Image (cartoon, rainbow, N blue to C red):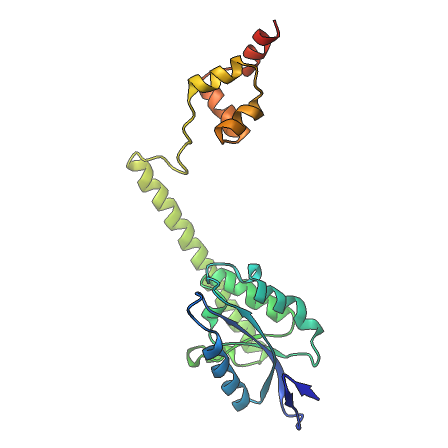
Amino acid sequence: MELRGVRILSTDFKPAVAYVRVSTGEQTVENQKIAIEEWARNNSYLILKYYEDEAISGKIPPLRRQGFRRLIEEIVGLKPRPIVTIVYELSRIGRSFYETLEAVKALETLETPLVSISPKESFLQTLDPSIRKLVLAIFSWVAERERELLSQRTKEGMRRVKLEGKPIGRPMKAIDKKTVISYLEKGLTMSAIAKILGVSSKTLKRRLVEWSINPWDYKWKNSK
């Protein structure tokens, strides 16, 4: 049997897939592949296939990346069935701990657990179910703390902005009241006016309410 151009003469090798990612076009995934290949050989794994995301920021959730999504979709159908998914380090999955946890859980569900070759993440190299359950429990706790901290920072930021008297949210798009009235007097519909002004109908309606203008008054006048 041949896999990736290598003839397997022994059944001692354990099938695996690997995921690699770099953030910019100036970087290359080759360094990650070399390190993964070396670790795989030393630990009796054979990489069946690499899944890559090049020039993709870690801010983009794993399941929204083409390479990682393809890994999730194809992994069950690979022959022989891979028993692990190998990465250079956990940061290759994502920056957000919560999103990384979701990806790790997805791989666990597919019975192809994530293995990191980073010495600092050796706890992800064991396949012992009890240890992995403990690791996932810790991950879940950290992810929840991350979400709570993000929520707290968001609230504090909004409170500070409010105290400084600054508007919260996106600035309102400037719409000239006289221009809108002129279009209404000409008999233009709300959707037509919104399109001309480059705003949504919802935004235009909200502005008319603020100005105490009823477009039906103009429609009635035009019908006379």
